View 1 (cartoon, rainbow, N blue to C red):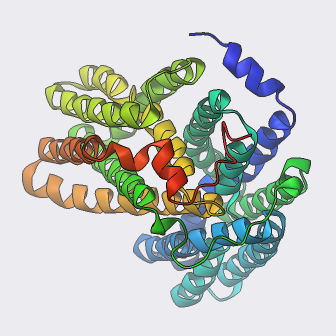
View 2 (view 1 turned 180 degrees about the vertical axis):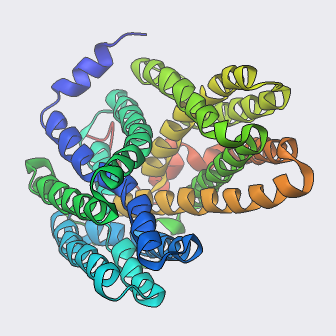
Amino acid sequence: MTAGKYARFLRTDGVPAVLAAGALARLPVSMYGLSLLLLAQEATGSLGQAGLVAAAAAVGFAVTAPALGRLADRYGPVRPLAGAAAVNGLAFAAVVLAAEFAPSPWLLGATAVVLGASVPPIAACQRALWWGRLSERLLETALTLDSLQLDAFLIGGPLLVTWLTLAAGPVTAVIVTGALLVTGTCVFAALPACRAARPTASGRGLGPLRSAGFRLVLGTVAAAGLALGLVRVALIGFAGESGGLLYTAIGIGSAASGLAYGARDWRTPVERRYAVLLSCYGAGVLLLLAGSSVPVMFALAVVTGLALTPVTVGEFALVGRCAPAGTVAEAFAWATTATFAGNAAGTGLGGWLTDQAGWRATASLGALVLVTASIAVFARPALLGPQNALAEGNSGTGPGGR
């Protein structure tokens, strides 16, 4: 293993700018849900109503993300990103005005739907840029850094919202979040790499869903999201308020293994690695059953997290490979929706199961879901191979095709 791949990746023309602008735009995506929740709670005086407002934004985001990704494929990323940013900025302003002057849960919910639905597809566009610009050797390094960035945003975003809320109130937190999101999106859309991306007209009908390989990958992405939601609830069921600390331990293991994984040149095909990694992830979740105290569970959670970033990198690589030509951005947006939906379902199911049967049952179900996904990939590896991806309409202009 060597850091040489990371150095070569960062020396690639345009890469540092894409990383920096992408980070500026993607950080507030991890902030808007919590900031909206806190704003709605202050405006309505009810955490339950605030939760429904935040859920409305989440539904809007999940529903429109694939459509925005399709627009980025068909017309290039600049116009969809700029248009979404304009609507999103107005939606942030509408939410703040509603909270200040007409704090009805219905009005807040309606504006929240528009806010979530207009979140620009920055992550999908950034991953599509990697797929179109990088060699196969550097692609997994890029996707590893993408995954590590995501982990950092999921930790740093809520912390920044909390600090802004404590320092200046939830209104300020929402305004700062919206300003960062709109500004970051405009900066990203103005990048030469973004403006040079060629539009396609292939994103029609079922889009990437017409590919059997992509449907298989999408199912495993949803399964991994479901498992992560179950694990999060299981850790809270075990440790109560300390569950957040244990979830952070998973992030520590994920980050450590991810750096090593992205630095290595792999000879084993990614579809085989992905199946093995899903099994390892499931085995790691089973290890949590041995937890007897918070310190022991912390160590076990670090081990569990070792497979998380490599699994995510495998997801990203296979999503791009199996997406038919002209549907890459939409495919990544579908993957985001699948992760989101799976995670939400896992959290809801995990809460019920933990109440009924205890946290060990919840963790066991998470492991079962991951092993089932692994078996599905092991059973049909040909669907995910490069030759099959090409046969299903992938033009091969991604890694290795240039």
